[in-house]
Image (tube, rainbow, N blue to C red; front, side, top):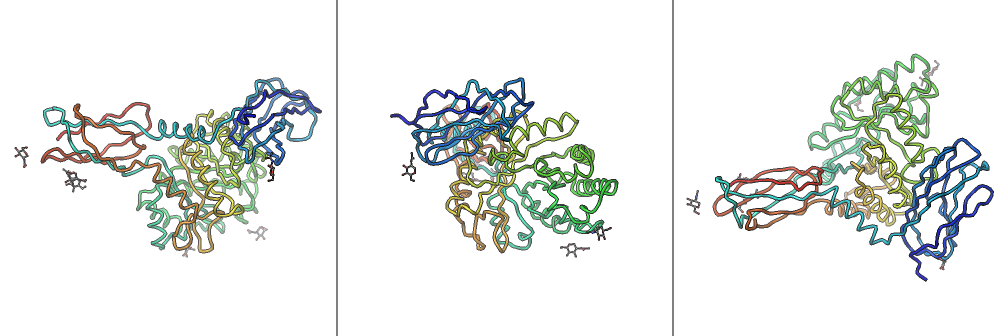
Length: 498
Ligand SMILES: *[C@@H]1O[C@H](CO)[C@@H](O)[C@H](O)[C@H]1NC(C)=O
Ligand SMILES: *[C@@H]1O[C@H](CO)[C@@H](O)[C@H](O)[C@H]1NC(C)=O
Ligand SMILES: *[C@@H]1O[C@H](CO)[C@@H](O)[C@H](O)[C@H]1NC(C)=O
Ligand SMILES: *[C@@H]1O[C@H](CO)[C@@H](O)[C@H](O)[C@H]1NC(C)=O
Ligand SMILES: *[C@@H]1O[C@H](CO)[C@@H](O)[C@H](O)[C@H]1NC(C)=O
Ligand SMILES: *[C@@H]1O[C@H](CO)[C@@H](O)[C@H](O)[C@H]1NC(C)=O
């Protein structure tokens, strides 16, 4: 029997939940979509799970369903062993008895090869661009046979990593970093507990020095973060404040950071992890977050303001941070008048599910905001070899999603190691995850191109987006020039006269 096809997905009702039996599925990536309607509650988080003979996939998709309308569930899974009999189950995530109706559900299988081809197609169309270089003499006559050399000198796609104060004065670390990355984020050094450990005693010495390092190497940096809703990481003196004292401390924090660093950071994570924690809302009222964004926007109207959250793209089993919860949170704040420009997805994975990851990114993309993977790593619990395999899956999925505008790794190096995942040992010798990153950095860059103009005096190629240097020579004449490739469906035309 061909295990790449499902039998029709038809549903039986058991005590309000929906179950469906799928016969015989092979080792594939599956995309799941379904329209869900509920009765018996105003709203409910409906979760899809899958049971095979050998394993239960706890969550392969979820949707916040509202009574009286159809809600769209999008998810997916990747089987790790073939299954003869799998059970697809739609359940209310709290155990309340409600009636679930499923319509137009679809399960679509993809082989690894099909998945890769799709990723490559997106990369070719979104991350690269066609170029035609025209070479002529000063009179405009086309020159055939001119020698062309093209070098990519910078990359348009921001790909970087967290750094810590450990990079200061550490020249091997600095040159290792600069050779690879065009973007950075300070792991902890901008956080409130770091810049103002005691009230009124702000000290920006360390972030200033880190900023000097990134500026010297034309590396862009994210500002992480202004507020962190998790009380564990709020300075003790701030936790001690309430009412107007807290309000004025909060205002000074925003103004101090944003006036000092006006224009320096490409993004500000204004409110970190607000789906999981709500310290400031508890103390300052339900509009606290809205107020943060308003004040930040007033302090620097050109600043790009982000949210940043975990367990949105990593899994769908965290009820606090499903993709729909994040979307609703962003919509609510925007309706309240919030200035918010980007969606941060922390991306701290254990075992990634690329099919679910794509479904989540697709749903978030409907907001039309840039999406960044802001803190990518794989849990140390899986071991170095699997960290590398999983990291490659996550990076490929991120880079090949058209709405993902940048990727940051959470791999700042300390004498004792890294948060969860290091790319190298302390002598900057690659670990398996470091090899993955180095290989992808090469793969996602245009190799040096050498060629000759044709009878129309032109030479064409596909290049990754970014800045290029081109050298043309014909006979005893030679000319250098630069051009840049930015995102567009059109072929870029560039002319050089000798
Ligand atoms: C379930 O796992 C066992 C042991 O790993 C394996 O031998 C068996 O083939 C698996 N069954 C299916 C249906 O994959
Ligand atoms: C500020 O921080 C730096 C680096 O930790 C430290 O050397 C310096 O003494 C601090 N300044 C004050 C005024 O505390
Ligand atoms: C918190 O407030 C109490 C009472 O005013 C004070 O004794 C204590 O030192 C404060 N703690 C911090 C960390 O500021
Ligand atoms: C450009 O090409 C000419 C002729 O091939 C060569 O002499 C020159 O060094 C090249 N310049 C660069 C920057 O590659
Ligand atoms: C370049 O070559 C042309 C003939 O191909 C010659 O007429 C001209 O003088 C040369 N120019 C120089 C600067 O050598
Ligand atoms: C091309 O660039 C190289 C190095 O940047 C320089 O040495 C050379 O003189 C340049 N050639 C022309 C014709 O501008």
